[in-house]
Image (cartoon, rainbow, N blue to C red):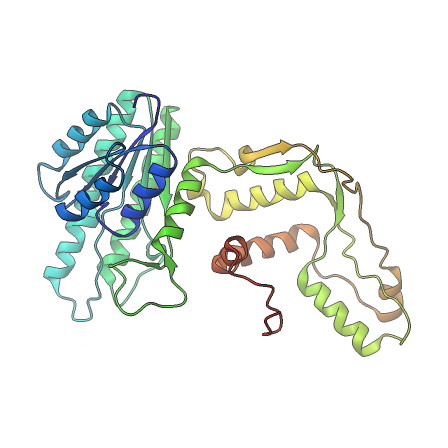
Length: 355
C-alpha cells in the first residue's frame, strides 16, 4: 500500500464524491471515504475492498476530525484530501432554519476540514488539498441565496489557503474546483440537457489534479497563419456578394505564429482568466511538454491575401493576440461543446444536419 498514493474524500456516499472515489481507484489510489450514509459507503467499499477504506461520519459533528485522523492512519498516510461534502436548496421563503443548516455544513464544517487538512500537510511538508465548490461562487443567487454565498466564502477561503501555501514555499498544492451543473441528488428537478454527469465531472477533476500535459510536436517552431473566425466569415460574405465569378481569393490573417508561441499565449490567457485552476503551478506554461515530431510535419503555412484586400477591400479586424483572447474566452464559456468533441458524442453535425 505504501507505494500508492492515498486520498480521503469527505462526502463520498453519493454524487461527485462517489464518482471521484471510483476514478481515483482507477488511477491506483488507496481511498478513504466518509459520509453520513453507512449503507452507501459500504456498497462502494465492496466494489474495491482492497483499495477503499471507509468510516461513517457527519462532518458537522465534533468528532468529525477524529474520524478523518482514523482513516489517515488506516491508509498509512495522506497525499490528497478532497472536500466534497456540501448542501444546497431552493429557499424562496427565506427560511432561516434551512439557511442555517446550509451554512453549518458549507461554511463552519468546511472551514474546520480545510484547516485540519492544511495544518496536516504543513506538518508533513507536502500534500494536495482540494475542494469541490461550484460556479455558484461567482455571483449571488436569488433562488438559493445561502448556497451561493457559502460557495463564495469557500472560494475566498481557498484563495487564502493558496496564498498561505505560496508564502510558505511548501510543497502543498491547493485546488479550488468549481463545476457547473452536475446531475447529482443536490440538483433538484428532472434531468436537464445542459447538465454534466457526475462521472464526467469526476474524470475532469482527476485530470486537473494530475496536471495533464500540453504536448508540442518537435521543437514547436512550425509556423501557421492564424485567422479569427469572425474575420473569416466576413471574408466569405464579401467574396459571395462582391467577388468576380471565376476568380480565386486567398483569405489569410497576416498572423504567422510558431506553434509554441500559440500554446504559450493560450497559457498566459488562462493564467489570468482561471488562476484558481493552476493547481500549485506558477503558470500553465509548466504543463507544456515536447513530444516526438510527426513524420512530414509541414514547417510553414502562409497565405497571401493581397488580392482580397486590394480588390474587395477586406481586412482582418483581429490580430493574433485579440483573436486568441476571444477564442479562449469562448471555449471557457462553452465547455460542453468541446467536451462533446472529446468524448465522441459530436458526429460532424453541420448546419443542423447530421452526416
